[in-house]
Length: 200
Image 1: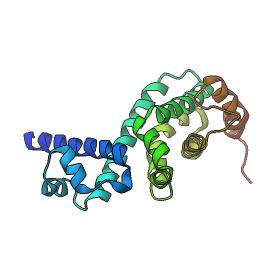
Image 2 (image 1 turned 180 degrees about the horizontal axis):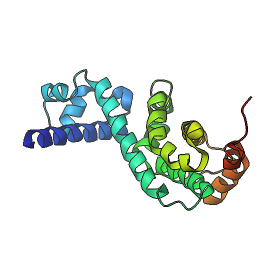
Image 3 (image 1 turned 30 degrees about the vertical axis):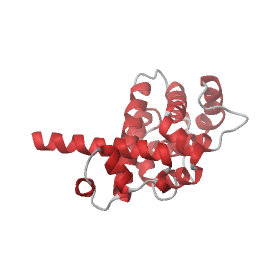
């Protein structure tokens, strides 16, 4: 048990170091040696913790960041009082968390292409799966299980899209704008009262 705790601490230290290095120099310029030096571990230890080097390490960092993001989001939506309130909270809090993520903001400003790759074709399916695992059970009581995963994925796509390419017409981080957006586009498409409608 103690060895596992020590290993976990070492992994977190390396991941924290990788995050700092990326903020300092950009993903493309960071080397394994940079991360090892920053974490105060040997190159051999880094490869033992993350066999495969930088790619495996960055993948682990993305997974940790996503898990932390979703845990915090869940805390903000857990006591929603209605379907509309739940949807507005999801959109607002997810948008605000993305904007508050200093690491992500630095990456967007310095290396937008790298952020698009990080959130893009290779990793978005996993983000959608994780988001659905969290959000689908929250929306299911309102719209049933058939469309819960669909709504969870769609909300994830919307938030990421508006974060990466902000709109001049709507700010999803503002409750008023988010509520208007939800009423105009989300509720009509996922109206609980239409669940009895037979699909053609």
